Amino acid sequence: MSDKDLEPRHLETLDRDLGRFANLEAAAAYVSRPLVAPGIGFVFIILAGLAAAILLGQSGEMLIVDGLQRVRAGQPVQGTPAPPRPARGG
Image 1: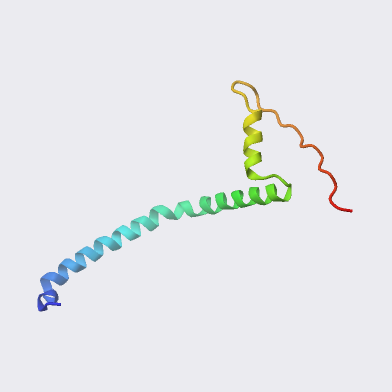
Image 2: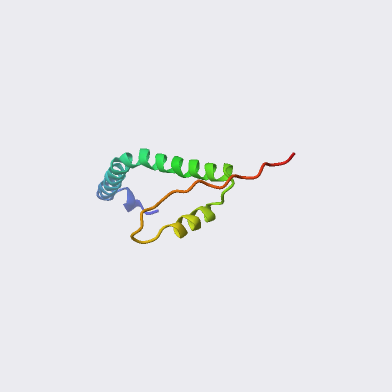
């Protein structure tokens, strides 16, 4: 390093640049704070849906395919009950 890096002129420039980064970081934190709760809620809904699909014996791919096959343009969407599952084991 050179001795010129410690001159007051260079330190003022460094302080000014670091101040800009600090302001940018504070603004990003202020803007992103309201998005934390909806993001956590969205992750919870996705995980709950996956857990339900696994526990009910459906793969995610089949849920999407079955849902798309039943929807027709201009037609109302109607739900149908799932067929009964055979009993497991003995």
